[in-house]
Amino acid sequence: MSMRVLVIGGGGREHALCWGIRQSPACEYLFCAPGNPGIATIATCIQLVVEDHSSVVSFCLEQKINLVVVGPEAPLVDGLVDTLQSYQIPVFGPTKAAARIEGSKGFMKDLCAKAGVPTARYQRFTSKQAAFDYIDSEGAPIVVKTDGLAAGKGVTVARTVEEAKIAVIAAMQDAKFGAAGAELVIEEFMEGEEVSFFAICDGKTALPFTSAQDHKAVHDGDKGPNTGGMGAYSPAKILTPDLTDRVMRTIVQPTINQLAKDGSPYTGVLFAGLMLTQGGPKLIEFNARFGDPETQAMIPRLKTDLLTLLLAAATRKLDTVRIEWHDCAALCVVMAAKGYPDTYRKGTVIEGLHEAGLVPDTITFHAGTALNTKGEMTAVGGRVLGMTGIGTTIKEAQLNAYRAVAQVDWREGFCRSDIGWRAVKRGD
Ligand code: AMP
Ligand code: GLY
Image (cartoon, rainbow, N blue to C red; front, side, top):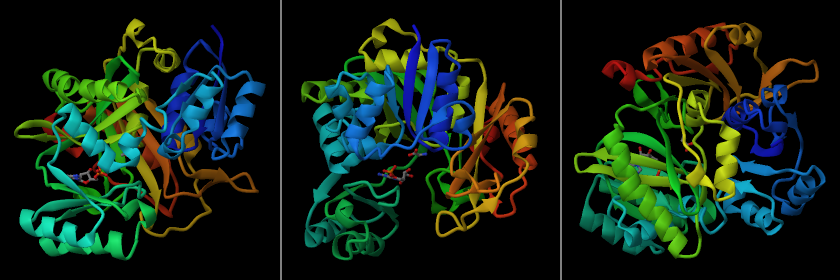
């Protein structure tokens, strides 16, 4: 079968997805909207106004697209999948109703309660006073979350009651997160190590994909403010096969079953952020998409044809697929613009990417890059590059990734020097 594929998005995650799809002999033509200069070396990048669903539909019909893969959460929460489905265009990603597991924390928590999924005890609030009373009665540490999407900044892990109340005031009174913070979820603080787990779903069947760990804090030693992720590695061996079974049985499958029962079956990748507590794995949050930068450390390990897998999920045939992995580890070091996650300069020139590309067992994934009018590679985003190393162990993958990093000549950029430290310490 020869397939014409459209990937929506233009970050490191989408570069990794395009890289994987390109490996497939079934991929006849690959488009990416908007893509980036790295993606442009393996796909045709096109400008589409993704918010205008009809323009995406017109493109798919004109170009006879056989599969659309939606990378980021915004178009999912916005219902792009529903529109494409109404035109019988196969699409990998959840519908608007199913994507509420990411778009609304309150919805996600209520769903978990209904399905019996282990997660932090919680309550939902639309009034400041009621939130204050709950914080007073529960005490600290406690976690305050905006109901809606707040670009990863809507969560406060409060060490004190005062800190929790300040977070409530910021969201509800000062509307720091706009409509996303009009409703809050306040929940129990969970202690343990965090791990990300991914399952591929077709509405009914859920297949375990793999695990990863990312580093959210901006500086070495997990210090400083949280970012979208400064690096990641896969697999996360701390999630043993036994724990993986348990996560599938107690978290993923009950969620998929409940969503199907409630009339919003889940198709796409279910990304479970887990806390490995003393009482077993508990859900921190769901995302309705692949992780970034986790994907950059997962896709290079995948042995199964990615395109066949995504198509099987989109067409409800996952029960015919087996997911296999190369016997290796991968680790992605994010290079970001100095100042990220706050303000940073745009347009600074990056050199050395050709040399980085020659380092064996590495892949350079682009995120916030663009070519300037002189044809130079420049940084235009916060997270700019994902230097990914592959190896038989996490340690070896780490060495390789940093070998590629060392070739990049970009004075206005930085990266953490300790990505993977937990796994390396454990000898994974
Ligand atoms: P989220 O956006 O929900 O993933 O939260 C961001 C980060 O806050 C997570 O990666 C955790 O490190 C932390 N976090 C969220 N909820 C909890 C919780 N209930 N207990 C402890 N830490 C949490
Ligand atoms: N790296 C975390 C995320 O993609 O949400």
